Amino acid sequence: MKDPKTAHGGILAEYRNGNYVVTLYADGTKVKFTRDDFFVADFPDSIDLKITDRCDMNCPMCHENSRANGEHGRLDAPFLAALHRGTELAIGGGNPLSHPDLSAFLSEIKARGAICNLTVNEKHFSDNTELLEKLLADKLVYGLGISVGECSKKLLDFAATHGTVVLHLICGMADEKLFARLCDRPLKVLLLGYKKFGRGEKFYSAAVEKNIEWLKNNVAALSDRLAAVCFDNAAIEQLEMKKVIPAPLFDARYMGDDGNGSMYIDLVKKQYAKSSTSRERFPLETSVDSMFARIKTA
Image 1 (tube, rainbow, N blue to C red):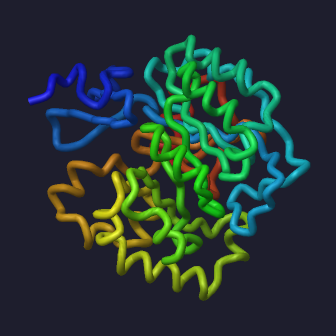
Image 2 (image 1 turned 60 degrees about the vertical axis):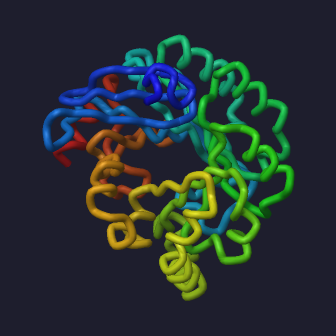
């Protein structure tokens, strides 16, 4: 049996949250342990953090309605100074690389003991590969999510050689041809549910539905041909993963409903919610604990 202190590249952070213990490993593995039959969090152990609405991609399904002249959020919100050590921030936008204060912000968050992960589009990855390499090497960013576009060889090689890089694919947008380029490679993939929100609400079509249905019928076989496949809660629902994964395994690996150990914060609009598609949103407060307590009862 492997020593848990050295497994998965070693422990990155470990802390207690409510009635469970969270262990984060250097390769991105996350383990929650409790002696109870349920998890009760006192604070979010992961936060989906939007720092900008600026993006030049104009993706037709963007649920954030990001645009080329979008605003940047302020990165000095009071709650950020009191984040719990080990809290994961999934930093995105828009294009987070467009924010002029990003590097300084990542350094500050690291100094406070929180864990920064970053999500970018493939085009922005291609245009900023050296910067992203440095952020990973300096451990200012631990996990790098890259939303797949054309699926270039450069992207495939980069993802195959960086253990904490995860390729993001949207259910309904990713088709059989795209998966054919990914399969049988040492790649980690995150499937994201299609969000009927923002521009995504209008863009949804029969073609999107067809791709979702194809993926639903083939997700088990595809998972066997990749190094790792994981799902956000929307993808779990859209692909009916409870029918694919045996109940004991699903229960052991499921990280919980939105708002049970996670939350969404929009630094541009100064709002927070259970998730990025929640229509019920609240004005930003000075304490992440108080914000989390509110969405747990919303």
